[in-house]
Length: 122
Image 1: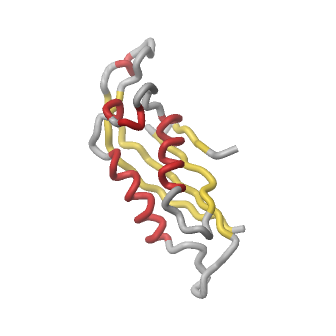
Image 2 (image 1 turned 45 degrees about the vertical axis):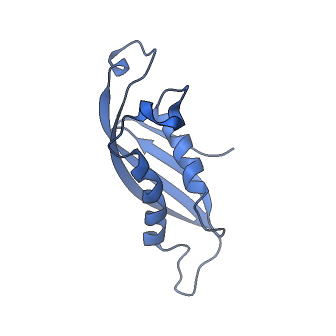
């Protein structure tokens, strides 16, 4: 099994409703998104998936969140736009667009150098 990862990023703001601290106020992040896929097959060039193809797929999802107020997006209706929720939402949206030979392993969302959340399906 081969595991391939790429990293993308986007800038957006959010606020955490009900949070007992400064994160309840609007603030922004440059979110780093690391996507890992698995494949057992290599093509005739010896690639599981072309990194540029994977990058286009990931960027087609991530770009929707760029320069937005995450709280205003329908994906976050009724829930806070935490790193955890964002990782899960990105996972499902990216998973839908991957070629059949690839399985999405995980999506990691970093809101800073110190803090990240990873989502994997059980």
